[in-house]
Length: 356
Image (tube, rainbow, N blue to C red; front, side):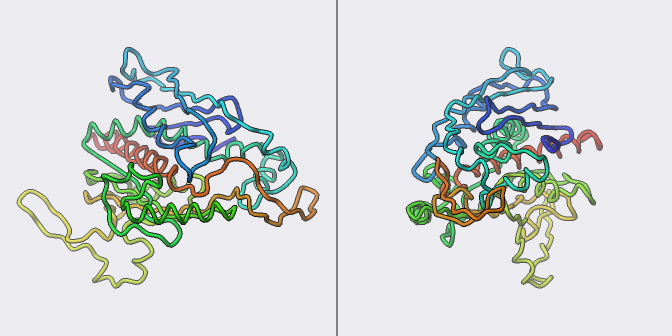
């Protein structure tokens, strides 16, 4: 199966399925002598793991990571760094009735058409559980960024029609939906719990911001920084749209309104606004990189839906099992991970090509 790798000089390759023995990731391009322990990875995985609250799946997985290679005496060696996460709480019997049914919103039909076979137990490689591998790799990328003074954070900007009215980074990890607004978080919880009671699910928007990213990252044509960011984030299951800076709102603006006008300080050149979201001409300009992604409602819902089976016979489906009524809280650390991996890859490319 192709498409299991991402990145050029900082490259990740993931493997494993939701109901297989384990999932894992191999990270190539990790510089040597970076202090790294399993707990550094575990801290990030704990933010993504299931069973965190009433608005996430009740599946109980510790998501305990084991570093297999690439670390010696607490430091990276510069060789391939491999990590594995064993599955312990699969309930494959929850999917036995779905063996011959095409679930609405899932990849059953497309996988079958492409490969002639598909793993109906939790969707196999199409499962959101694959993202644990990305978060593990992203933890390393975050350490590299931290060494360079680059910080990033993502948060749930909205759930359904409930949106955060302010951005307070200090409260993001203090509420179950990872919203930057505690009052809005309470209303988001009610919206999610309401959908859950109906046997349904709900979507939302996640925003991510990269601060102190140097100017000059990205290439002008096919490997524009926003193009690779889009590739990284759109590769996450459940993401259905992306915008940078003003994004789609720019379509309603005039050039005189959208252009970020320059001004000079004693030691730098800056802009009065950041409508471009920190990227101009495909290259970072030193402003905050601002990205938003649209997260679809979870496809697995208990509410009855009409679909068909492999024999093209109509059936009514109500999906059993343990599923997130809203994907946003657990996708937040995945967005951070993929964004961190992308920025690190561009930093390494910039250094390799231009010796910076």
